[in-house]
Length: 341
Image 1 (spheres, rainbow, N blue to C red):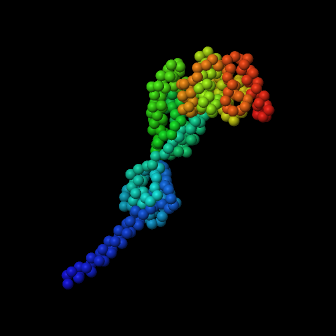
Image 2 (cartoon, rainbow, N blue to C red):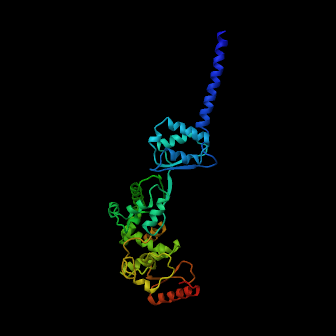
Image 3 (cartoon, helix red, strand yellow):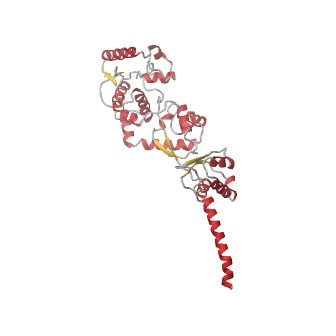
């Protein structure tokens, strides 16, 4: 009799336990998001629990979102929301997602430093990958005290950014980002590169500034050491570089397709027709290929160059001004034939 009576309780209890376990699994451990692939939640300093729910609602199954809300109600997460970019992988349940958000277990972002010309363009590009807005990034990039902290000026600050791809967190502060870029720059300037710069009698900033001109002159990596050698010859001879890209930078007009004589009189320290030596800083963030082209420049006697008349993107080089005038005439005729003004 006792065994029969106990079975009356065991079976319903087991059934209730099974239902409870099933509901726990269903609400907390079945896939939270709809569709395939990972989804991302971005939480900034202005977000509260309702805005977090709103983001999750656009990608979540209703029962899983209910499970997430249940976990939130029984924790302190609503009062301690952590900023960041969080990845919700396919198949992850509400419990795993809740644990990530509560503990700040972010997914990193791949931040590529672009070869842009100006600080405002860099700030804009970085802000599209980071929580920080472009205005706060630009303010740091152009702030004299901040630049001095890293050994730069507002004119040379872009020298610190080596155009590679880095792993960072979306909510990284601007100060921490600059610290990382400074560290990566020091890694880039290894013993070999530093020794080559010193052998040329150039600082790292001067190498990067020259590389920025080389990059603007040609997109053909194979020709860059030749172009770098030509400009280095002019530097050693104390000749004006007479680099057309510096005129575009001085005028802040990067759509100019043809440089005319009247443009060469612009009053700017970046005008390398009026001023000898290098400009105050780079006219863009140069490529690694451009930097290494300067450090490994071709040793030759050319001091003039002119774009080839076939518009191949390469150049004719010359040792004498007379030869250069002939090359320039051929290129000018080609521009006129194409109606390029």
